[in-house]
Structure formats: structure tokens, C-alpha cells
Image 1 (cartoon, one colour):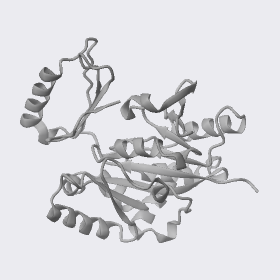
Image 2 (cartoon, one colour):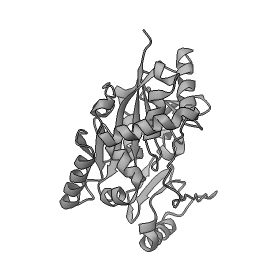
Image 3 (cartoon, helix red, strand yellow):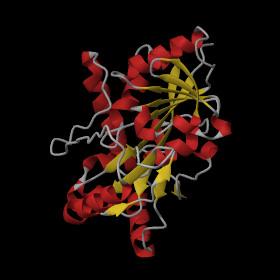
Amino acid sequence: MTESLPVNVITGFLGSGKTTLLRHLLAAPELGDTAVLINEFGDVGLDHLLVETLDEGIVLLQSGCVCCTIRSDLSRAILDLYSRRQRGLVPPFARLAVETTGLADPTPILATILHDPVLRHHFQVGNVVTTVDGVNGLANLEEHPETVKQAAIADRLVVTKTDLADATTLSALRCVLRGLNPAAPIFEALQGNVDADRLLGQEAWNEATRTAEVRRWLAAEAAHSDDHEHPRDRSRHARDISAFCLISDQPIEWATFGIWLTLLLHRHGSNILRVKGILNIAGSHTPVLIQGVQHVVHKPSHL
């Protein structure tokens, strides 16, 4: 009998804590038999977890996890990793976790796993874990269609930043989430600290338990895939959202940078969905990870 490895999808809007959750999961010993597909190593900050580089774009972490980047097409990335597993080039992982971008509609990803003629013989959909920003979640659900799909299709909903949100906001957010997805349990996470096994257990995907709207989304994606092009991890609603990157080849003075970032977010925070960077700070022996969402900047951490 052909094995069917579960593919777990980790999704969530920009700044919802997906990266923090992923870093926590990657460090968990109980997930040592997991392979993880991410967008960019630099986004997650894995240097402190790295044990060995197995190949270009593929690394082995302290927990035993195999971690690799999605270079272009999702199905090709999965099949390439599976081929390496079969040839003994990477450890024999028992499950796969896929991180989406913050602007991704997860429906095409699930449709790829469910309907790709090659993938479905070796893989099945496992759990869909969606992170929801406890502070900005209500506004995101109202303004960005991707967040609605991310929440509605989830098996597990993880509300983050509960220490920064007031009780009234969190109660209203839970109410909206239960309306979108009555069946999904809602977890709360501080700094990504959630029981890894409860999120990425071995339960199989059951489309019959989804809401009628989710089933319509999946059916539409299945029909859309008849052109045999595999959907990539991208948003169809993000035409008005752009990204840019600032690069410095010199160490950065922390005080100067802090003043600049504070002024930037004070003036334009409502229009800045996400700030994330790994900085070489003058006088620091390790890189510093900074993250912010709109007007909120989180405590920097050394990697």
C-alpha cells in the first residue's frame, strides 16, 4: 500500500505571528520527523537552529527537521523533497508543513495537494493552521478577503498577541472567527508558544466537515486547475499592496534606527501592513530580528 504523508498548511495574514509560531514549531523535538517548506530562510531567522546545510536551499535543524525553501512551484518543491527522501538524501520525514505568504489564499494550495495527479498518490492534506492577529485581526478580516479565507478554511485557529489586545477586542474577534469557522478550535499563543503536536497532529483532512462556502471555493479551484498549471503561493487580491526592502552594507546605529522607525510608523503606520528585518547592529555580536505591524513594534530579539 502506498504511504500517504500528511501536508500541514500554516497560513495567516501579514504580521499575524505566523513566523513566530513557525520558529517555535521548528525548535520542537516532537516535530523532528517533519519537513518544512518555507518561503525564505531569512524571513524566519534560522541561524541559531541550523545544524547542517544538506544542499542549496535545504538545511537540517537541531530538532531533526528538514527545512527547505519554495523556489517557484509548490508541487515541484514537494515532489523534489519527496524524491530526495526516497533516495536517502534527507532524513525520512513523516509529515510535511508548508508555510504560505501572508497574502496567500490557501485554497489553491489545498486544491493542488488534493487534485494533483502525482501528489495525491503520496500525500494527503493534514491540518490547516491559521494565525490571527489579536490586535489587528478584526480590521484585517473586514478589509482583506484573504484573511476571511484563511480563517474559514482552518482546522486550528491561533489567536496571537493576546497580551497586547484588550478583552473586548479579543471577545469580538473570537465571535467573528466562530461565525466564519464554527468547527475549528481556537488557541491563544504568546510568542508562538503552542503545543506543537496539537497543531500538527496526524488527523486527516475531511472536506465533508467544511462549510458549504469552503467546499465551493475548493470545487472552483479544482475546476480552475484543469489547465494543468499548478497554483503558486500568491494572492489574487493584493494589487494595491507592494513590498520594498532596505539594505545596508554597514552596521546600523540602534538609536538612529529606532528614532527613524518610530517616526515612520507614527506618520504612516496605518498604511504599513508589515515591517520585518534582520539587522547588523553596531556593537552587537549577533543579528537582531525586528518586527512590527502598523503602529505596533514588537520587542527586538537576538538570533
